[in-house]
Length: 364
Image (cartoon, rainbow, N blue to C red; front, side, top):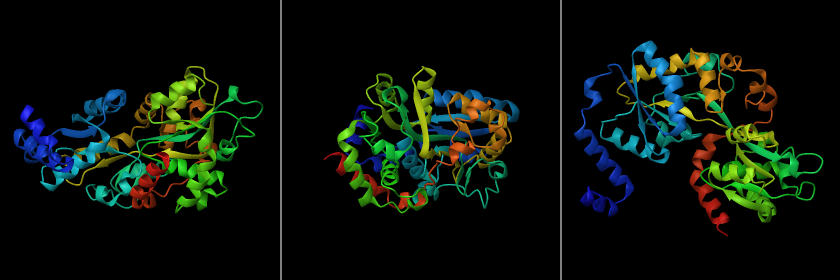
């Protein structure tokens, strides 16, 4: 193992992924040869989310169908490289993956995925019962999260900020601000354009020059560029910041602690991770059987969404939630009015340009 690690250090990551995949495939019996059997393998990122996914979703599915679900852990950023390497040598060991927001729009990624057909023909209830755009050609959305502004009501005199224009209005709403700085800077760019008067329906294609120019106005007032959920939770809890852009799940956690936070739905965006099936999945029928089972069981959807502090994505499952929880869902009608429609295809085409420009700007 020591000599292998020294060997790895001298080569690029892409080469090493291919080598390791080949080694693993030679060392373990191939499920491709074994046929579909009674198994389903899903790549997952581990942690509390994976534990709840297993307990609330996969264990009932296995009891009902007899299909064993195997979860393969790893880092989200590595999954696509590994899947591509395995596919290229014809030894794909996974059936499913939870893909991040926008992944299904990236051609080099969706080329590895099973086409679910027009209007999700292979998973029809994802379309017919969906609350919002649950169905994509290459995946379905199991739960909805959201990224939105939140403000600490106790740190403002009088009215609480209500939109991105108020976020940028330091004179009317003084107080330290925070914004995220990691893999999805387009959410911040959207906020800057909305603050500059761009109508939500006219956001795309994003005017990057205008967005970065607007961001220069707020930059001196950003006391924290946060990178992890724990970091922003701590800052809100300690009253280091009065207002930030953050995930709805983190707002829920802090509200449960008694913090006086106000959700601001205007200018929010959905977090739309997709469950996808690989085109070369060894257990493709079992994967499709699972997806159809999930959307046929609204009680499972509702329980899972509640457990991971997100919203279910079907009308049937939403109806099972208490009224107070429905009102905090991003697809609750009053909230959905403020949600920005994102052009993920445009973002996929310009991802490198956006990230490179953001990194230069944030480093200044």
